[in-house]
Length: 164
Image 1 (cartoon, rainbow, N blue to C red):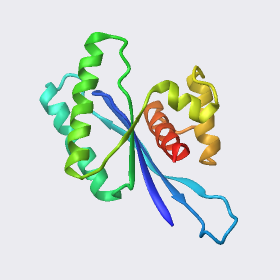
Image 2 (image 1 turned 180 degrees about the horizontal axis):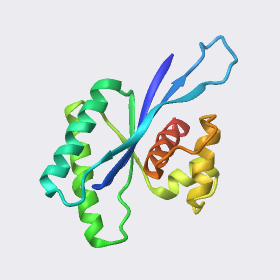
Image 3 (image 1 turned 90 degrees about the vertical axis):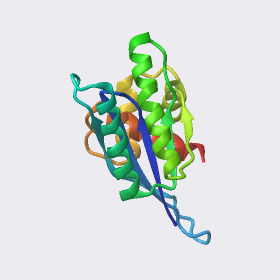
Image 4 (image 1 turned 60 degrees about the vertical axis):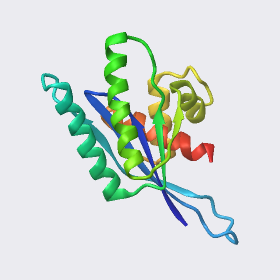
């Protein structure tokens, strides 16, 4: 049996996405599940573009991604408050993400950054490098996925897999 999990790292300027496939052997087999990356990358919006147009780019690109891959599960990083101006823009982008997911009838789970770090490294205060190393190791990649937002999205997808 094969399942596709989409991880999303929301942002207005850059929204990271990471899709993993989990192949689970039959019940009679003693083999471990095989987890591999299907696709990862970013949805990027130009900085000097009006906010409505930037949200439209996120809407259109995420809609296309969901149509192309039709994931079985979706995981999103919870909003992390650190700068008020940036938080509002990220919240607006998250709203668009939630709208597109609802239109595709996709439910989602949310993880805090600490929960993702805990799931991948066993330590909720792990640094970014430790998480990226764990992503590469778990997905048997020779290099860390780039850009960072895509690696973060893959980490979120892996955290969703580990939670199941």
